[in-house]
Structure formats: C-alpha cells, structure tokens
Image (cartoon, rainbow, N blue to C red; front, side, top):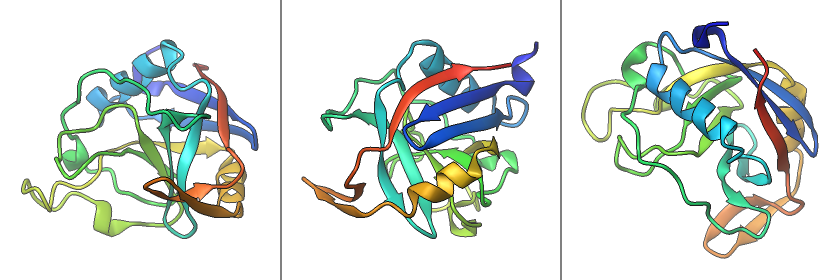
Length: 170
C-alpha cells in the first residue's frame, strides 16, 4: 500500500476518528505525522485546545498536561493548494511559519483565513495534510465539552479527551 493513500485511526475517549492523509500534496507533513503515529507518540495525548466553530487541537500534551518532546520542525506546506475546510487536518505551529512538529488541528468550519496567501510570515498559512473520512461526529462531540483555562492555556476541555491509540490502518 502506498503512503499516498495512508489512513490513520485515532481511538479517543469519545470515539474513533479516521483521517485520510494526502502524501501527494503534503508529503513532508504526512511523513512527519505517520512517523509520530508509528512511534506511539500520540498515544495518551489529549486534545488540549477545543474552540467550537473554529478547531480542535491536539498532539502535544499528555494527560498530566506535560508537553511532549518532539522531533525537528518541518517545512510549511500550506502552499500545496489544500484549503482549511471543515473536517480537514492541518499542522499547528507557532508564529514561525516553519515551526510545526507534532501538534495538529481539525477544522470545525471552513477557515479560509488560515490558508496560504503568500510566502510572508503573515501569509504562509497552516498546512492541510488530510481530512476526516470517518468520525466527524466524534470531532463535533468534542466541541460540546465544557472548557476552562489551565495554566497559561485557554479553551482546555475540563474532561480530558484522550487519544488512547493512533495507528496507520492502510
């Protein structure tokens, strides 16, 4: 099976999410995500930032809210033509366009303002590398969970939404 059609299954405390990755348009992001999945990195991590009507972010913190140590950053592939539409998964990053490591987010709606417009720090955008093909109801259920502040972090679900297991399924 070619990596260009890889799917990743996230088994969470709210249900299962299956993501179809796009290794053709986002080869670096896809390879990076699969490497973290195969290393078991995401097992036991939480969705630590959930904003209804915007996105759900995960892949960086364990249930004790310790930030996990990541691999090197990857090049931003937001100029690949893929858009931040409802149900797509994209790489999270800091203000540095090329700072993405393990964290990702799933869009709740079309977030065109996150799309690539130009190669300036403000225009780079966020690299989409796949989309939810099963379990969008689970992603939507996350948005119904009450959130609060936790340390310096906002929009943290009061009850942990844990990725119990992440695995490549095809």
